[in-house]
Image: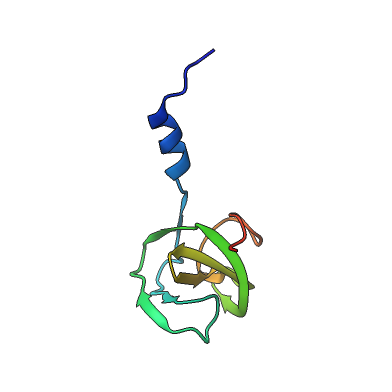
Length: 97
């Protein structure tokens, strides 16, 4: 049986897949899952974002369709899934609590 090192467990735990933001868009990052939340920053074109968890919010139409799904990319930072190429119309990460 192969030995699993502590470093390997930590690497697996902290590996989060990054997804590309729609090309040609500077996407607003909001403090919560909806357009009624304040903009905390704007993503540069061509960035890739981690998705820590996802939750429903305001419905938004973007280059990847119309959805009410919002992606948590950092503590207190959400982007509409309509602007993130996840390859899915549904959840690709756990639901935010």
